[in-house]
Length: 207
Image 1 (cartoon, rainbow, N blue to C red):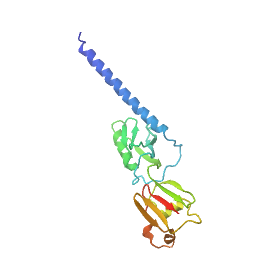
Image 2 (image 1 turned 120 degrees about the vertical axis):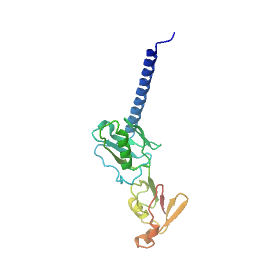
Image 3 (image 1 turned 60 degrees about the vertical axis):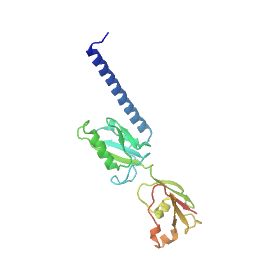
Image 4 (image 1 turned 90 degrees about the vertical axis):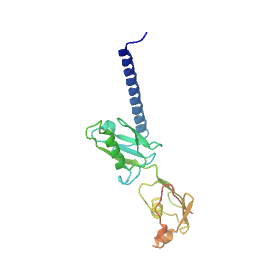
């Protein structure tokens, strides 16, 4: 027995509605999980990055601020695939965009859903770009590469050299390269070209 066409249409409309609801609930769950993954205290300061030049990376913690829309705002952890999930928008590419560029992209995506949206992005924690200092320094370990710094500055951030450190034979390991760094020469204002800017993943070894 064939059902009347109006029942068939109603069935497919109901099915479509259920599918859309399920998809929306899935997006909301993803947003909730992203917010649970980070702990940003109200009023806490973000990382001192340049919003026009810093490139967001995977595992960075960002704070999305949508003006007058607190339910759309909050901290988010950039996933390993470089994306975030936002209410009303869904997935957005964040990796390799500056905070300003991401804010503009989200603003554009919200234009047909909100009246004159304004979106601001703050990088709260840099996890995607690091350098390492080990050996005869006062505070060895990994450090976030928030702004461009030199080898000399990185050693200072690591608490400086210990008393018996070899100041003339410091090495910066960069991939397959080994860059020599003479701390004493740089302090004396000599051969300053060796005081290179650090790159993501650089490893400073002080013997």
